[in-house]
Length: 475
Ligand SMILES: [Zn+2]
Image 1 (cartoon, protein in one colour):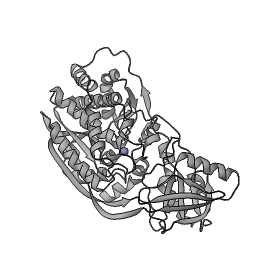
Image 2 (cartoon, protein in one colour; image 1 turned 30 degrees about the vertical axis):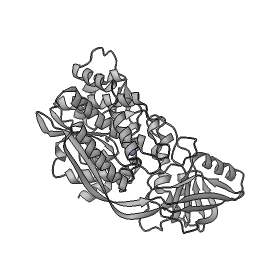
Image 3 (cartoon, rainbow, N blue to C red; image 1 turned 120 degrees about the vertical axis):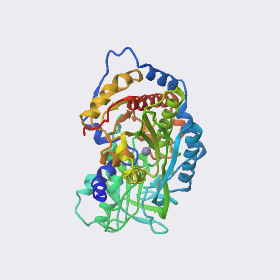
Image 4 (tube, rainbow, N blue to C red; image 1 turned 45 degrees about the vertical axis):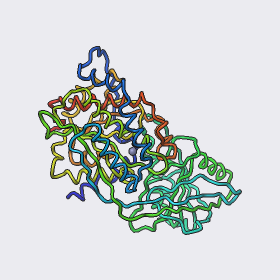
């Protein structure tokens, strides 16, 4: 039963995984401006004053990204980050600090290079997609077949690409809510399998990103079962533009591609959590999460060091305020989100028969460090009525109500599937995909004032959810 339920949401999980905004949930949503609010709940004023005058989240993110750096799923650095998290929870005064481990398949990038051999010799900036196999030693040199987007490859006849390298172009649209990600990501997720089905040797894609820098974007890919695994890499946007121009000229293109990517076998990953124990209803859990792992190219600052700082910082602000929440606030730092929401699934499995039914509300911060503009409701009338009632308290932070059905963030999808009520604080991600999964995902990109606004919003949310008598659930 559990297996079936998980596999049935796998497609959705694939669409939303790896730190993109949950695009599906924003498609049918409406932003509602909150008007005529002149007074603020005194507790919320206390919390937002503390958050906005401090650097709680910013300092936590600085510590994680500076002291540990990149934290690939299952790596030694991810293990160090779990130790860092346990120590940070303890230093900040959290209770019930706990790490729950699980096993993932490790993967390393190895050396990588790509070069146009014909019509003229030119280097390309390439990076392997997570999970890709290697090329044979010495690389693959082959003629290239151009596809303008993933859809054209998918609808191409089977066979016909024997001995070829497939190149999939197609630009991603820039949007505040990351709405272009789901579609652009299809070639990253499924490009290798669709090309393999047609006999290709290897695949290159235009990076899934919105920048014009010469950094390629990595991100997890998947092999369909029963198909030959072929290597897949992404090239930077300017390199993709260059290839597009060459193909437009009608000339034949030959590329040499070498990727050293390989599996490193079973590795330990884990979720780390800490709590502020509720006074009146300690059994009721309000979960705010982020993910501790990152890709290897940058230092995982916007993805998702920022989220780690925001949720830990928000709980820190609540502790500093002296306010005592009635319900328990549980901060969960998920492991191995990037390779398929492994931490989210492991958490749902580990808590299913213990306290999952006592989770009253769950959300994750995983869309960078940009300001929050929207408070998005979850599913069902009770949830939506309760969140609507909170909305006026967010007006002072420049946050409007978003009516829609959120799933709470990537690692919350498995909890949502088990019926845990969710909410989402929507961040401005207009430049998120300029940096996402590139070497440019570093701490200097984070604005401390924007981080403080995020921390203030999460601190307000956990307080309001703790004080509310709502169960956020229709039944
Ligand atoms: Zn992320």
